[in-house]
Length: 528
Figure 1 (cartoon, one colour):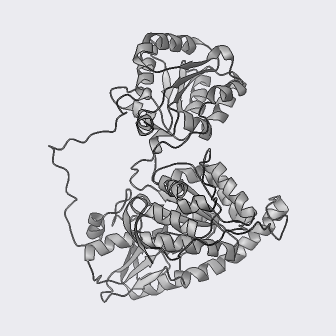
Figure 2 (cartoon, rainbow, N blue to C red):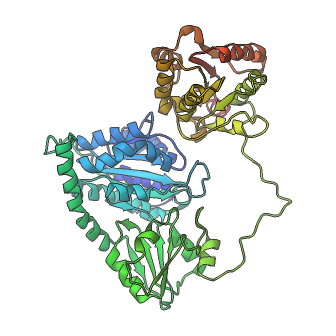
Figure 3 (cartoon, rainbow, N blue to C red):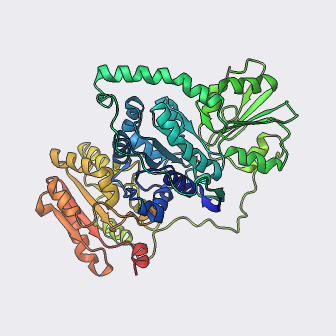
């Protein structure tokens, strides 16, 4: 078989194609974006008619993938970790409905928050949903896991969660493709129980009892999984439990021979019997896991009192941030000094808006428009324009989650803040801002909403926005009055007229929408 130098995301994408998927459903979000983009650009996927368009948000993606599974076909749904929060209602309930066609949910976590507002651990969602989940330790394993996960999904009739982290998603390694050509797509085949997906309480209780009855099978499969591997070592003073990518850091620290026994944990739920055997043979175990101390918490008491469980909770490892070879080496007692800091001569360069960015002009207008209003507050959203919090703009007061700008502005306005301003991008607006604007219109709240429309999903690489060319129609359809729905072009030459318009709308004691529209400078360059 041919060896390929793939990102972890690309290995997952090719495995999904090779497994015979009929569709990929996703909303772009770092570090998961490249999975869907790879499938979109794949000649094999196009030849087989694999559905590969972006969804409005992660919830709609999850529900569409569940619908494809309902029809008996295989589907993969991809998102970053905070996207799983958005999809969680459908995700948790999909464990209760079960899967008909194979259904794999890929969640890409971001320890150390390289491009995220938190570093939550998606493994907790797998445990919460009580379904099998996987955490690959290499790009090859990422490919192999996804290829196998569809079979596991159909064998047990449940969705499968695959969790990876930024380092796994965005680093490359040799991957051997296991098949010559993708498997054939499944035919349409409806569930044998026609009421299984109707979660009325009586049916949901029955389905939930069935799910609980399967947990022993999940545990036994994990106990015997070829993905969970114990590597023997002679020194039992310490046992190592390495979750997913953490095994690579341990190998980097020790080189070719690891002196301690190391259990590489990839498939969940926990193989408790195998882990208990390791713990009984060692004086202590150190749990290396990127993210929260999930395994460390679960293991306390499993192996008996003589074995100490160490990790993030007891200070052996930092409580926050991603693992790296240095903090792994310190935990193993191989180095004592702190990590080397950058010399003071190296000045960090903060992120900034691109020269010529339309968001920059919009912030210039906004700052001037509110200069005489000390009570003004600007509630921003997730996107490139969040950089408006930094110098030279320092123009926003909040950024919490997708869509929160409009709803937070509404709550602040109802608390007496005026003017209350929301800044949101075109893609974020269709992701989760529409319902907030509907609330504003319904209650006639004095909120000025600025939709900074750069005609793309700029922060994640320029994916299509479902609102392109239709924002004004959407806002009008929600009930925004035509006299308070405006489109401006953010150019320096329009500065005075745009500032004047903003000032007028900020005084209005009702719902107002200003669409600031100019193409993203980067996507404009790429399109010529």
